[in-house]
Amino acid sequence: MTVAEGRKRASPLQVAKAVFWSFLGIRKRRDYETDSVQLKPQQVIVAGLIGAAFLVLGLILLVRLVIGRLA
Image 1 (cartoon, rainbow, N blue to C red):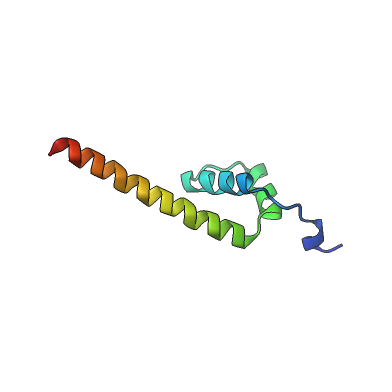
Image 2 (cartoon, rainbow, N blue to C red; image 1 turned 45 degrees about the horizontal axis):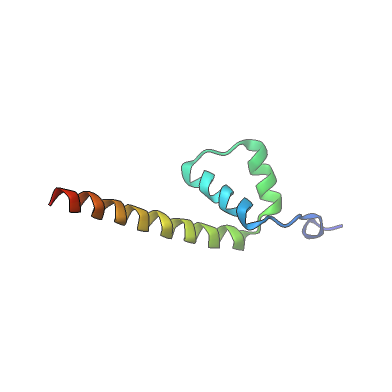
């Protein structure tokens, strides 16, 4: 049995959760080890790009909200 056959696929929610906690820099070693077995690099890359886009858009909206109230 190869490593790829032994892998259990991660759900989109698991991928999003892993990326979210990675953005914060907080990961339990046990969760990291589980993620390293279940997550595919493509899943992490796509989820990371989506997470980064949400982060940037959220910051832009926050700045516009603050500037709009000051003006």
